Image (cartoon, rainbow, N blue to C red; front, side):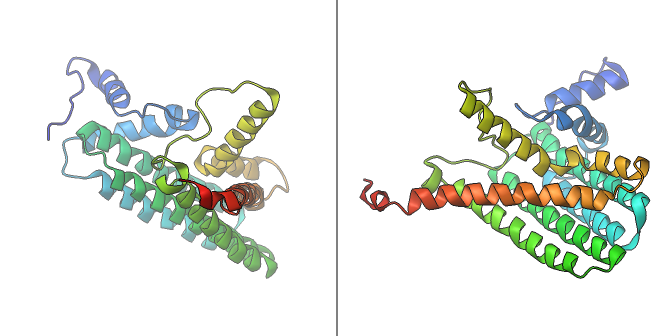
Length: 263
């Protein structure tokens, strides 16, 4: 399969910019557009003509992410969290590069999208467990281990709910991972706008690569601020709200007697 080539006369930065534009998703978040995907596009300069596949990059990103957990568990203090955040960003660059390489080489697939979803959730489980264990190791409070167990269970439940409500049998149409279900534009009406804004904010917090580095920097610059705590608490709160909202929606829809009278 022929790989789309960047313009040969554009120069290094022009070629890099062309690769970036060719490999973008139709819609993306700000962090990806201006931070992660430009870095991933740089890797495409070397990967586009190589035998490396998008799925191999996905697995590489997961392998690098194990370094996040190892750093959180072995390097105490704010510098340890900062280094872990940098390793996390490296892992996320590979996570972006896999999709960009797939679009560039014409190797996109539904299976690849679901693999990304699977790996993202494995990363979330590792991150929650590692942060909770780190808080226990730093303070000796065994209750953080209980928070870790509960947090891992919460992320697992939320992931299962997401998979369920995106099934065609429930949603009425197929929704692949990565699809924005909150609507592309600001809706009309105060209540709808408020709900839309809350969902967007929740999605931003769930997308931890967008803000975890800022938490790590705060840990280095703000006396007494614990970056692990500053990350884990809002992250789990948002997951709890999402799981509760989604579970309630499933219950309200499926528990109605009228559900069985549908054609």
